[in-house]
Image (cartoon, rainbow, N blue to C red; front, top):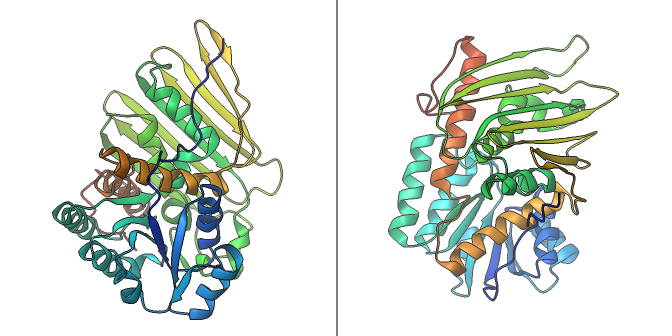
Length: 351
């Protein structure tokens, strides 16, 4: 059995627009590493701290211009695509300004903290005739991307279950602002997993989610490091388990069940994974190339550029991403009230 499934980022054939990046914090280096790999033209870098923009320019794109005011970058007619990586509370007005300037936008996740704001921005993108996409880069982690593409190609048949468990050490956040995020695991981290679950169960609507959190016996930081969620879909189910205070024997495991077969991945981290596809015809384990960081970031920008070039909807468009956020917000609320919650009924991020 040999399943030659295309899972690596696919670059546009000829569309190579000039790109501007707004927000030059820590995550921006992974964006820029990916864009250099894709031979993308990053023409401008912007940060309220000009020295941060200058640092990224020297590291990755020495010919780029730098700004400390994003409005100056948006005035440039030669820049067609803007990548926005600032912190979530600061993001909506910058996205709005970029859309009004008729720029295509790739927004860092989480897209918004209010679903109504997200819908308004998606409507604005439609009105201005531009694309608004969300950097859900986990979809292009090699193991997730391979399994996702196997589902798209019908290898597993209709998927009915997805179970994902991550047992790892997240205590490193104690010296960072992340340690102040109450729902660090269900919100800041698991937002990737809620989105990937939806990709593994295409066409399925999440009906209810029940989630809970707990503190580990030895943790010192404020946010609970143990979290889990059970999600009911149309004719399907899904579970997420996060043990973020695992000191040894770390494991990242995914198991997807379809009407014609299963897909599983397993490894010590999200960076090292072995994938196996099993059907009645046999089993297959591909030799995967690449890693989530930074191939995932390459994948999101490539998908946006290909969608623009091919004049088709982007698979990571903002309106679709609101469904992933609705699921995440409902899980956080469930963790607060200890009851099942219907996705979409919680319009803003709780707590």
